[in-house]
Image (cartoon, rainbow, N blue to C red; front, side):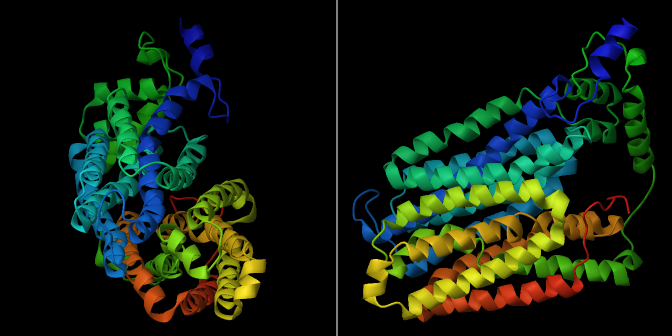
Length: 467
């Protein structure tokens, strides 16, 4: 029996398709359903807002530029609440209950969208979607990191950005080609399936150990490592892994390791905090996320005769390509070079786009109507390889271990505030100063970010997270 158990569970493979990892893979795919739903909810906005400005059919009301800015930006305030709320609840009620709670705001949001009578319904819906989005960035990474074997943790964690990008593309397509009242019926299926699927997976071993539920933690550990229940603990080749995990967590529970002022106000920590805030500001004030939300309006302002929503769908596909490229090369090239290429490439793309909008004559726009599509595709690819994909990885790897949790939470809260600012100002600035000047302003932010990364950011590739 012992030999059979060892043969069954001691074979290691780096492939996430290895049978030993199948429940970890299933759990990761399950939890990424809420990330996918969040992506759909994000992508749905751009074609829908364009539709609400130009069409007088369903849902029977139109919106102004100011109302559009609120519909876009209230997502950021909801995200801030989600960051704080789930950050507080995560250790108190556990990862699994938080996973259940993630589905509720987005389900309510799509019910509100279906029954919307005016823009206020959309305000509340976007705020609720933001709560799920903000909580998603807190709960999902921790859940995956605690159930995953170290050899596949990176691969499982990398699913998040890919699922988000894929969801955004699906949201673009659905909002463009399906009726307003059809979308909620389809989209609400995903969080409902997620909610049902989440009941099939146990709480993480780490959280159960922190609550001194040793027996439940052992069963959870065996479940995620695909160890049969009939195998006794004494015959588990991974027993040493579980025992080490238990000893470390129980030891940490017995020690008071409160954050001290000296942990925060020292040279290393302060430099890391400044870097985190600079990267968060670069992520949002560069317009990299705002353009995803307002792509249809942006293309409408260029004067191209290609359907703006069709252009938006193409951009969603480009974003997936950029995300995949980033996932493939990041551990080979390093984080810094990707951020430099991303900031520099985005600045170049914004400048080209602004010049086209400002100086192209009607004849040029008619003859080269494909040019804004190509330039914006370059911008989306550039943002996807670094400004969108690598910011969060670098922040975690830059912060010292003693302030990592507090620093990450503070960075996420700052990010949510910046999301609100960027999404609120982007359509208003585009209306007031013109798309060309807005592009030049975003170029300036990217150039400043490029210089900061070049001069001050240290490469974090291969850095041990316990350092």
